[in-house]
Length: 325
Length: 264
Image 1 (cartoon, chains in turn purple, yellow):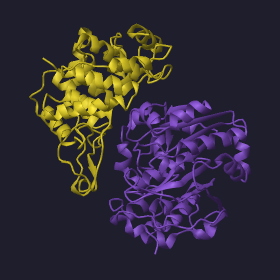
Image 2: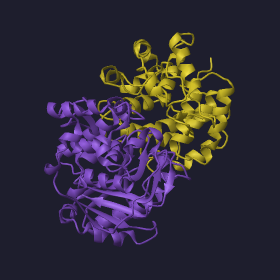
Image 3: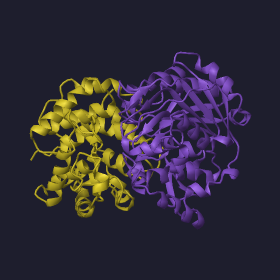
Image 4: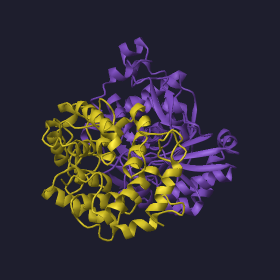
């Protein structure tokens, strides 16, 4: 996004002055990026046995399995708008499957929680999107994070310069917080994945609809600050039907047929962006996340599961510089 | 089930300090407290005078217009509303938007841009305080007219981003319609609200009723669609704001007026 200068991002309060002087391409701390595991799965449709597929995949993450036992698990899907012709939201069938997966691993409670960015009337969008049927069927509680009790949370990275944010208590106090985004292009940030999905834990009752202070402070800066402050434990990206073009709301469906999951969100998002034929090292929030324990370099990410063929996601012209090649 | 049960639920959801959260048991916040007061429950004026009401301050002069004890507080908040200015979006930010970014309005959060609902709240309140001719009200009216979507309704405040025309949804449409004086634009907004029969929620139906009544229209079958959504405990969606709006709407459907109604 042109209005967020690379320099501004790099010279955020927590950034080193040397890094600011030379730009990220020369300070990319490749060797300091921890090794990360990401699983990519083929999933042709929402009607396959997603529970079985995901039980086997999540079961390969023993730390998450151990954390789930007896835990209050909060699933944070992407539920932002509703248009019957466009795959805007995390599909409710995937939300249902993930809820069952964590129940399988012994969660004491599974809650679905989201604070839609544009819609104040969550009752309406939950019904329109089909999520209500899933909630009723599986007896899952839904928490509107926009109206949740705000909890003052300091921002260790503070690229926004805000110092702290009020964040929804349901999300920040979860034993196991799972980001469940839709794989989409985003007309400001390039792509919206497991890190950008965390905008939904910023309560509208404090910041409004849309959560405009985040835009004024910088979308990429906000993505970094919220991720670094909250550090969700797991993420599963809904790329079964993704969106390209004028995402995140007005783009076109892409039958990617994949789920991407793991414990380290920057590694998951970097993997997704490669599948979308972006160059993650050109996406500023991913590049800078490497300073805070994030892994973006392909050579440091161990991809397990199925081999997924990348697809060239169309983007608006002003984002072409983020694409690979 | 009825208005009385909804009232009773609101009363039992009230905090010991007189305020309401969005949910029963939640610490008090401005908007649910203002809306519950608008619905006819005694306003906790001491709490309202000292709390950080956030954007809900924009609704105070209208919401408390039926409460004689709130007269001074309404005047004081009106002065504050007149001094609140949204931040200016520069040309580089505005070039992606097919809207006049120079029109000032009201924001959800200090020092950010103007949006439809907070601007509608402020315009309703200022008109209710007989400031219809004030420059700020004219600006608010202009902003709302500028942000109308092609389908006749309003969304949060962007009718277009890049080359994509965006669609409206019921809540902002109803608030914008309530804020504006009768005009063809309002007629289109009211027509758009007919779609709430396919966009059913406690809030969408309540706000559609309030918008219709504000412009002298009958509530039609909307109360019949709203009432079945009342829960056995008397609430609507277990939310204070939604329940308060439902009480206001059901009463307005019978009485033909309400606190956000700007009819002289």
